[in-house]
Image (cartoon, rainbow, N blue to C red; front, top):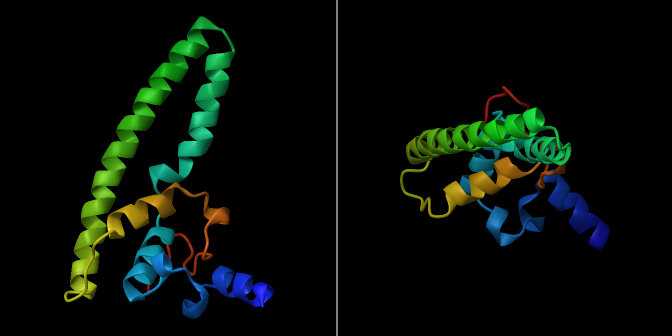
Length: 131
């Protein structure tokens, strides 16, 4: 039934997941991402703050928002590169014979989602140990 499928998707039962989320490598990526806090998680709230600051019309706040925008982009870039290398190294150690194609994009799209909206729901708490 549809309710059972939605519940299975939410809890991460393998048979109910879409193809893009299936498999041990994707599960490892999800757990790895969910165990960490990244700059990407704060992108949407930061962009909203920047938008509000831009709309105030105050010269100082508009200037502050421009600086905040530049810092946000720089931090996001550095964090993304750092995470990519650490994730790939971890996955190569755990899954030496598996194809890792698409895992970076998968991790980045998961990081960009607000934590409470991620599906399947995180199995690992922040600071927890990925399985």
